[in-house]
Length: 277
Image 1: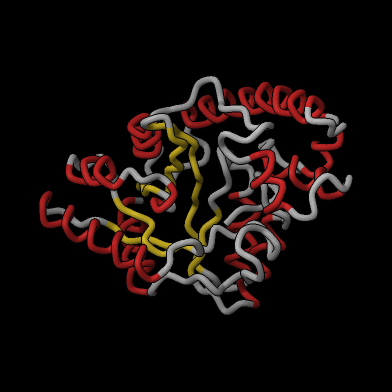
Image 2 (image 1 turned 120 degrees about the vertical axis):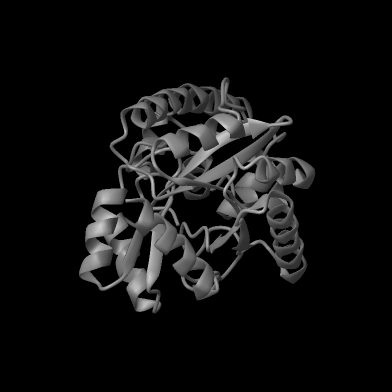
């Protein structure tokens, strides 16, 4: 899930309240390249009687493709992690300036200040630009803004100049005391590489359950996790999440709590992290 600390639409506290209302009992906040929302989310979750896992979603790149690596159970105050995140945030600012130049080249007058209105936390992201596009009538909704302008290869897309490799992201998560999971693998077409990362023991698990994983994708990644587990003779974690930003983000009509992880997988992750402390 994502809060206003990155590109979500609800504050960490509001998000935890919505989780409780949806009947969730074990949750994690995994904002993009920031830990800013963890402390308030954790306080709110525990006050509402939910178990909470510290989380983050780190940006990386492999085979020319953007690959997100989830970190569960991280120490948000770990110095080298914060240094890496500061570098990432500065790079996002530089990238945003270039994206807005491209928007203006496409006839869309969008200023940095207008984007900042939507970016309430540290992280400047494409969804913030998309929201301005909708507000100013350049697109009818966020999904269309991505499809026409902001997705990889579209007129206003700008890749980050330097991104971590998955191996570097995984190592940083481990150094910060966490477990590393590849997020929504259906987007990457990198199954062979993911299998190698798992068998090597570097990657701890796979996000099998995701709002954009249909039944075939769930079966595909469960099988990949089981095959890797047999190969390395060590547990491969199966995780899942809604990747929730807002009810209108992504697949139409997706409400918080609709995409769930079978509880035994979440409890296993929670217990492993509890024993690491």
